Length: 343
Image (cartoon, rainbow, N blue to C red; front, side, top):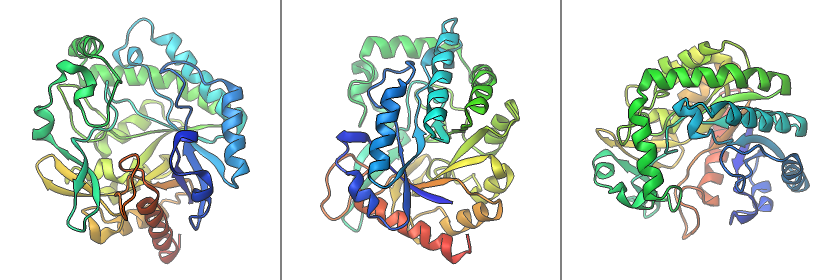
């Protein structure tokens, strides 16, 4: 295993120099955030990004993420050109030496929270989700009605997308995912890149949209769709751990070497489809992180891992969930557990 850290580029309030000072962190997880969804990543821009990371004494370990265009998820006739562009980005990343691509196949919305600053008992703040609160959001204003979503979609665009997805149920989304993988997995193999799909977060449908990557059976189905080593999973303890039905160590053992990337964070489940995020240690939430890491060790996991969302602590301000301090504590905790279990 090698420890990595999410970085949002030059605009990130956490500089690479500070990431470099976290004990044991070797790599950076990042992306080209100014490339429009669907467009291929230009090689010169990827090279500049990799050079900046190298200059800081780190390495570009994971591209997270190359966004998948909604036309692909909807199965529209235009999907082939977006898939070709996605494959071109993978090819460029392989040429620059980036070994893993994390992506997701969630319709319209990426990870979703209903609160960005839930005040916890210790005075820190954390991301939180409540299914009842989500139902109260009025999408007539577009995604600006949602915490953290700003100007992703205006009201008209969002309304059209939601209408289009009424024709796409879970099985149709599986078909569209299979079509995508049948084309991008060979491209990844040729580029020497491993693909690592992220589970749906939270792991259940929202706003009437299908979500299909919600548990171990679904992730096993995904790797069987194109049963080749390059087709794999990002194992996210927080996404899967939000559902008490998911036995995380058992899922790790079933997926085995198809886990190409690990997101490690903890959550406290507070009710039916309600949770908030916590500090990383097992004692702080409902995810037994020690058991998860032991399972990863047992299956021979040797890929990148990163501390996922952290609390905002010690007065830090910035992007909720992505402050320096708690994620740095998380990285050292994860490394300490890994050392202790003989990883």
